Structure formats: structure tokens, C-alpha cells
Length: 171
Image 1 (cartoon, rainbow, N blue to C red):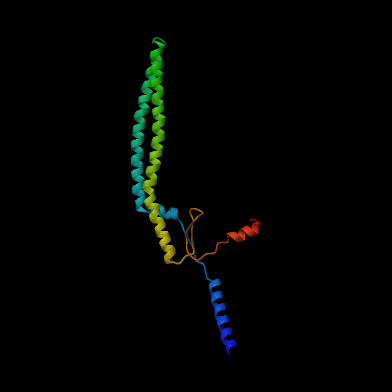
Image 2 (cartoon, one colour):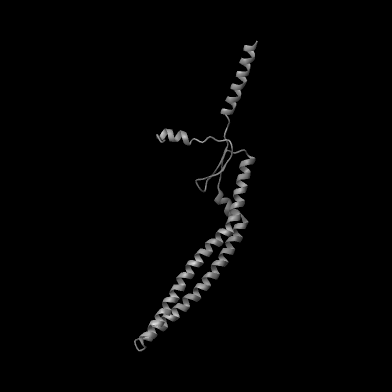
């Protein structure tokens, strides 16, 4: 009798282990780029970024015109003026050129920061939606078709890194 109970208990444990070992994994795919392009918030952000770009372009044109004017004045001086005045005017042209380069760098950095600030909440919203779908649908992985990256990794999954290391002979 005890042997039968013990045998039944072992069978039940074995069956539950087999059921857990045969757990199915659910995979999904999504094209995040396509979804991102469809989001209405993106259009608003792009318009804002274009407006910022236009302001920087207008300012750049003004600075460029100032440089061109100073350069033409310097070239028109000729050799008839004293060397100290010529050197001061040359320095003004060089300073104006430095301002152009500095402005270009600052504008590029600011535009990048603005772009990140404008698009980050939209990307976050998209990621939250993907994660929500993943959790609700009990997906193990969701792969992005636009980028080769896993966007959602739900439990359970098996890390096969040690197996791959063994296959490659790595320690």
C-alpha cells in the first residue's frame, strides 16, 4: 500500500515536471518604425523641430552675411593702410569666422537635444504599448522587424548563453 502511494506521488511529481519542461513559448513581432511614423504626436514634434531649424537657419544667414561684409571690406583695404589697422581688420574677419563655426556647433547640439526631448515621450509611449501587449498576451519575446532587437522579454525564458559558450568551447 505504501509502495502504491509512493509510486503515485512520484508519478504526479514527474508529470508536473514534464508539464513545466514542455511549457510553450509565445513569440511576437512588431514594426516599431511603422507604428512610430503613424503616431500623430510625431507630426507635431517634427513640425516643432522644423520651426526650430528655421530659426537657426535664419540666424546663421545673418552671421554669414556679417562675415561676408567684413571679408569684402578687408579685401577692399588694399596695401594703402598701416599694418596695425590691417591686422586688426584681419582679426575681426577671423573672429567672425570663429563665431560662425561656434554657432554651427552650438546649433547642431541644441537641435539634437531638442529632437531627443521631442521624440523621447513618443518613443516611450510606443514602448509602453509594446510592453503592455507583451504582458497581456503572455508573450515570451517580441521582436522588432525594423531593428534587430528584442523589445519585450517576459518570464519565463531560458538563457542559453552557457550552452552556446560550451558549444564554442569558451570558459
